[in-house]
Length: 273
Image (cartoon, rainbow, N blue to C red; front, side):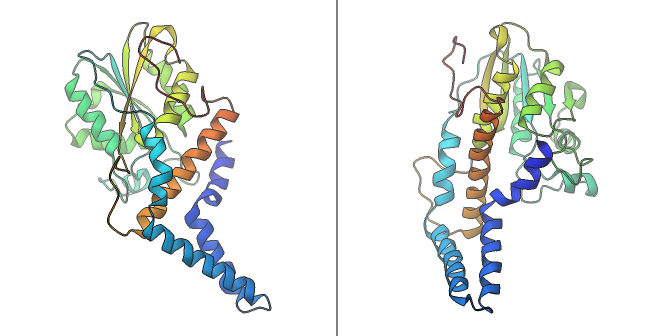
């Protein structure tokens, strides 16, 4: 399933589909089917204009980011776990220096901040390589480098570096963290990714036995109640690509039994999901 998902992923990317349509339309302009070529090229241009003027990507991404609202953390936290995947592990592995590319590392930086806030909490970083062609470029390696630069002693952190996706993050980190009954853990990941992450962690058994798992969404890409006033083509395409990937991921994970709900929701305190 991991290999299949990586092979099919480009065909779920609106940017790739638009580019392929543009190539096909251009080629058709030099054939007898030039009318079909004009339609394809015009459709791509119209889509580009739409994404520049209308924040379609933000509109599709916002429901994911709003699903789990930030909550006030308690005075005591027993453990904090962060999911890798929000920085360029390939660049950091091959360059050997902090090289985020177009990524943000918002998850790791939030994790470092919480680690300082809760000095007695157990810390877990989960993230191997989700790259089919570069399996040696692991998020745990880059994450350790960022945490070191943020001043977090690596001796405090348990690293899980074999997981390749969110489902494996949840299942492989569980025996490392070993959350006990009555403990409170904080899950850190990007806001748009939180629904799928919470669904996977619940399904994996993180909330069994009365363990409280608090979502800590970071790395927001939409602004609630605020309409962007700038024109952005690439940013709009990127938001749309992330949203499409996450919505498809939710459907696929639910169909495979990897999440506890099609669109996981927050659980009222004291109740099981």
